[in-house]
Length: 288
Image (cartoon, rainbow, N blue to C red; front, side, top):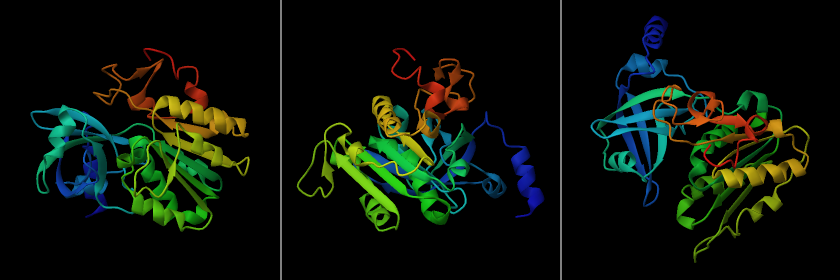
């Protein structure tokens, strides 16, 4: 693939139009959660496709509709575009019935990703709740592959039911990495559950802010993220160093339809990642 061919493909890329992608991998993570590994069928477009951890794509199923899904693959180390999806609505139920070899549409990438360049040289706290682990797993994988660039890494995953914890083997491996703390808890335990059982986000009390140079990145229910931010700032963290990935009904991804308006901003193009200091006055406000 020549540089000229890739540049030409990038130049003709149109964010308003889906491009064709083939399902190369289909992994059933749990009863309702699955992962699609995609490759754009145009080799030049696939080679030109560039994204950052934290961004999302609009995945399109012909005759059914389109849905915003976070990209969970590593842009520098993985060839496929990987998306982990929860089967919760009409479009995602349609995707759940697909098989390897079938084709869908992809628009993107969209939005503002995680501040990974700014986080280099600092301690990092990554906190997720429920399927919020999907948007942050790209961050964890990114840091693990470049571990020497970052300070102490704390990974916190809180789920309500043990079935929501979809990557136990990955978290077991993360525990073995030096200078890394892994905290996992479920509100409800089970016979084979090897992690903590904790109501709400009590597990946060085990988190340590070891340095003034600490960045936190989190995704999950907004109430959980707001409480977690208040706790971390009580330990000395700056509000501007806490980043949240928000979710709304994103239908166009380019700020035109207005469905994801958040105050004077749009989640699709101004987010989905925001510094807490940017949006703290809006969190918890009904109707926003």
